[in-house]
Amino acid sequence: MKQLRLLLLFAGFALLTMLAGSTAQAQNASRTFPETGKTVNDPFLGYWQTHGGLAQQGLPITDAYDEPNDADGRTYRTQYFERARFELHPEQTNPRYQILLGLLGKEALFARYPGGRVTAASEIVPGGGSRNFPETGHAVSGLFLSYWDDNGALAQQGFPLTDAFYEVNAADGKRYITQYFERARFEYHPEQSDPRYRVLLGLVGKEIYQRKGSSGSGQVGCQPTKQIFQYALTSNGELASRLGCATDPGYDAANGIHGGYQPFRKGAVLINQSDSRPSYAYGLYPDGRYKRVDYIGNGSRKAGDPPAPGPRTASAWEALGSESLGAATDTEEFGDGAVQHFRNGTLYYVGGGLQKVFAVLPDGDSGSWASYASRP
Image 1 (cartoon, helix red, strand yellow):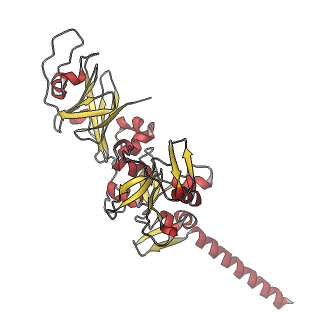
Image 2 (image 1 turned 90 degrees about the vertical axis):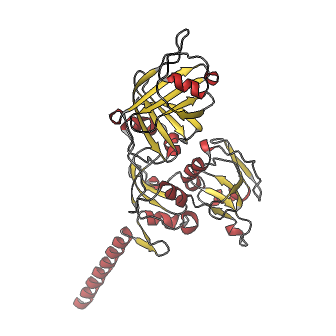
Image 3 (image 1 turned 60 degrees about the vertical axis):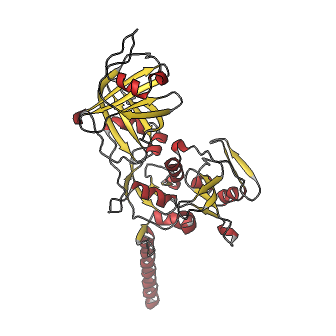
């Protein structure tokens, strides 16, 4: 009997040891992918395994690291995969939502199409059925709808951001019926003999990571957002998503940056004057378009009934076309300024009595613009 008790005691101890070892292994699960040389650890590995694995998420293309999030300016533990970006959100009280997928479909859409506007004609996706999504005003139909329903739906794919249309694929240069969603891009590949693979997800994780650029240490090269722009970005998530990462540390009055602004009957003039960097003037028009010219310095104050074009806006007013802007409707504002460049555009701050932030996307000779408050 004594031997039996000892045998049971040793068996119980062995079982407890095995269970403890299994628990520790589960808590520290890890897998290295030889295809890319990157390692995925829990909790990201558990999410990858239970949410579609290779087909839905793709191979890991970075290790996990802390990255500032374009959507809200906060820093999260992040890992990029070919088709997704995993973000760890410990602030979420529900464990189901502590791992979220980044809005890579949206970022890829705005990176390729200014303002996220696709002008191509809508195309019919093979297969039956259709569903309208009033949240974004777009419909999903055919095989795309079936794939959306069968592969994670809203949590995995997000809402549709476009209708289906033909797009030239950046990976192989071929045209496919394509549709952008908040977290993914669907592509119809009729050349696939296996029907299971005729709807594929675009490599948006890889595209966005490469667009941001690697610093060589597995992290993307985002600069911290300058303080004067943080309120505009954190209170306008779509603006942050459209701009992407900051690419320089930003410059302000300490670097000789000044800002000017004057409204006109048919638009406004925005001035970025710098002592050491390029200086520009922007014609801002009511339809959301802008036109940029080099800022050539102060002009002569124009005669006529006030308000008249100010000394700083006068030369820009003429260079942009006085007829296109019309008469001034208020006096010129001028004060300390700031500028910071992002992947897909630039933010400007005009101080003085205005204290507003202006976004131009992309920063070139023309594009779209919007203005935002610089503080609550």
